Image 1 (cartoon, helix red, strand yellow):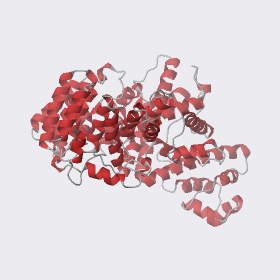
Image 2: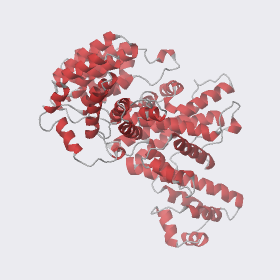
Image 3: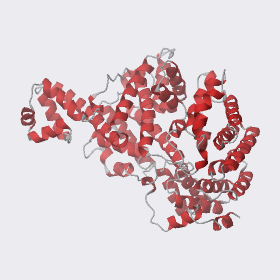
Image 4: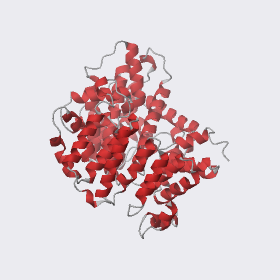
Length: 593
């Protein structure tokens, strides 16, 4: 039935686009799509470039460079790269050696930092793959980069503050540091040049370079090579070996930060970089002074600190801590940023994502404007917390509204208030009965609630609301496909397949979102050949669809096609979905023939 449906598609639809794509030369999947170049390996590459390391450094060898430039690395090599990065940050003075400051037994500091970096990378890449694969999302890379930079500033502030708690590491950043500004390296060099009473001609003579080189350094046209930093430090300190060594290390740190800020500015703009640096300083200081943080013993403080250092914003302790900080923070963008980072990052990113395919959805803005007027009394707090969801049209990804982990404060438990939040959405539907967004928001939220509570009544009500949304906007694939996804999320796979077959008859064309959901359900029903057919069509049209590659690998492995399974598993791994790749490497499919 499904293959017949695909053959009967009208011109210009999903099937025709797939066939056209198959005739083109396939590109590197990591380099296409709206989020190309925003995975963790690209961030690490920018950091390593900014550090300007020696040629024989482990982070500049061929294995590391291949990894930073989109090649898979085995688990051992990845681990060595993260360990080298952790040790380099210690050696260059960016983070302290924890050993002398801790009374509890922990691994060497390089391993602790490597664990923290690897954990953050896995979280970020999994998140990127989820939003990359969402239905019909389009995003401007500059906007996405700015959103990530804001969230990352909270995460970095939390980790730096943790270092202050457990190792006395000073995290105060007074004002806007020179390295964050335009021509940061030039401004950094001007200060000691003036303090030493040197002209540009004198500085050039002392360092042994042409005056034009010094002009280029101070005016921001290029940067001094690593080999000149020691010479500059010698000149600025009058040849004092102790002071020169300390100053050279400080210059390398500040130059690295300046280069990193320059790289980020090329993507998001200088104002956004400065704002992020200010956010790190302000939030870290606020966390340090947070009076609600009480540790019974030094051991407890250190154990909690290591947990926060490892998980960052993804820690259960972080959600509680950031929530407390936000309560004491003045109203404004910074407070909203703290709250966004405390919950699922998908919500914040939802503000940057929108669709351009379905015009009959213009009333979402009205929903956002009138949202707080709909509720009163005890519901107002829920309305305030969910306002961003409505205004960002997160109906496409409402299942991610669940916080990532339980909170330590019972009154903020993730399931507390969820039924009330569903009631708020019901009232929105009553207020806007002809709005497809309102019904889709409610339907998706109820489906999420059913998945997390196991209560079927929520799913049934969600199905009903999504059917209404589909009736109001027949061209919109999300509420139609969501019906099958809801049923699959509770394990009703056969029922989900029947639902997806039904909605396929009503959609004007089949989309990658529908193709993935159908392929996934067929895979769960162990109809691997059919599932693989759908998933391969999705990847032919959307080469950035990480989840489609993951389940295509699952189908291929279970069919005994290890060559194809390995190919798809590696691609999914590069796009942030490592599950099938790890399972394959551990021998899970060894017996499949």
